[in-house]
Image (tube, rainbow, N blue to C red):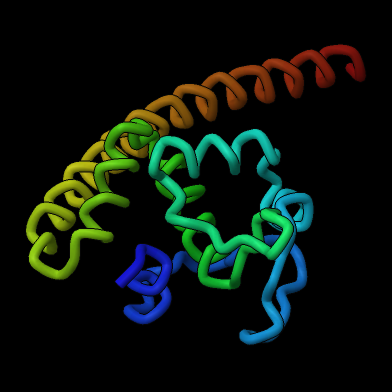
Amino acid sequence: MTVTETTASRGDSCAGGPRGRRRPDGQDRYTISEVAALTGLTAHTLRWYERIGLMPHVDRSHTGQRRYRNRDLDWLDLVGKLRLTGMPVADMVRYAELVRAGDHTYAERFELLRATREDVLARIAELQGTLAVLDRKIGVYADAGHALASERSS
């Protein structure tokens, strides 16, 4: 089973999906430029993902052009979400390798995602603290602005 077949068949793709309009399965043959437009990734990034093993084998046309499928778009969406978590590229590649290796790697995949989740929660807590500081400062400036306005109108 491939990475993209695994994510599509198990419902592991992320909510939201690629930005653009997708074709029905069976008619889903996208060029690299179409995938770039759908995902916001550059063609260079898509080729790099394939080269480092983050993107599974992509089908080719009879002329050798890459032909992406909806399952590839699902995988790229998941990769985008993993990037947003701050997961290192090496860990994303490891995750892709584990998915390709099969079901016996569930425990290792679980641990990798669990650790990433803990990192995300720590970052959220840090950002909430930062937001609280900003809210306090905004309140100070809002109060000062109201006080100045009151003095001017008296």
